[in-house]
Length: 308
Ligand SMILES: [Zn+2]
Image 1 (cartoon, rainbow, N blue to C red):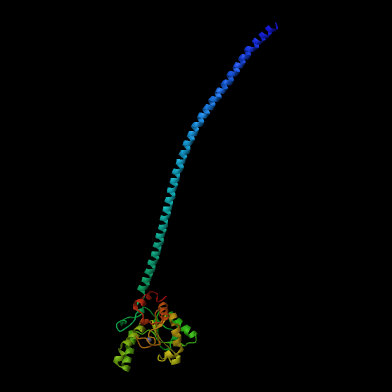
Image 2: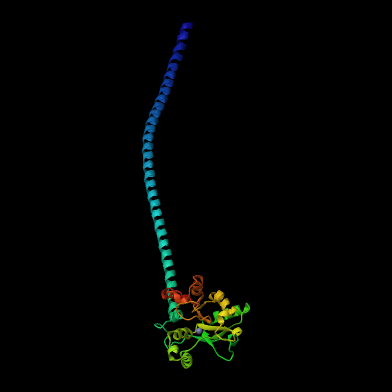
């Protein structure tokens, strides 16, 4: 009975249990299979992803290379543009410089064309002023500068300030420098010449020497200095302190002694001073030479700046 019961119970429990076990096994197996499938899919997926990724990496690397090349090209272009811009600005600078030089040359030429070329000429028996020549502008010299207060003497108006400066500075330094003669017209000289002719005879009056000194006075830029110490005369001026002062200082005011002692060109005239501009007068002073000893071509380079 007990065995029978046991068998019955066993049967009743065993088969359902078997069924349950079978179901459980099936379920678990299904789960495993599903997971394996998932795993295999995942593995497959990973492989695909890996291949895709590698492809993408390669693509990216290629793209990066391409971009780098493009970048290099851009930088090269920028550099070459920079160089071009550089050369353009160099060219512009050059053009500006040239324009500046041209306008300087033009203003020099303008000044030169407006400057009387006679003002720096060396006069000789072959080259002298025309009888009709008169300075562009003359001005009366203040009487206080003259030795003879009753006379009217004139000077080239562009030279007057320098003439006043030299007289004021000399006389401010203990000198009594005065003007004996300044501008002389052709007519005045003609009268002088006839006086000379009467006094010395035609031969001497017509000599080259007389013509030469006269030319410089006709320019309006030349004066004869004197002092009360020698009674307003010209002779003996080289013995005065005024003459020594002029030798030391006249060039600073643009004046030079035309015919210095021992010049081989004309007789010594210590009183006769000609305005040639400060630059040329300074050169003559520094070179320890004299106007008539210089080459005319060198002298001419000072003409444009004679009144600076
Ligand atoms: Zn003179």
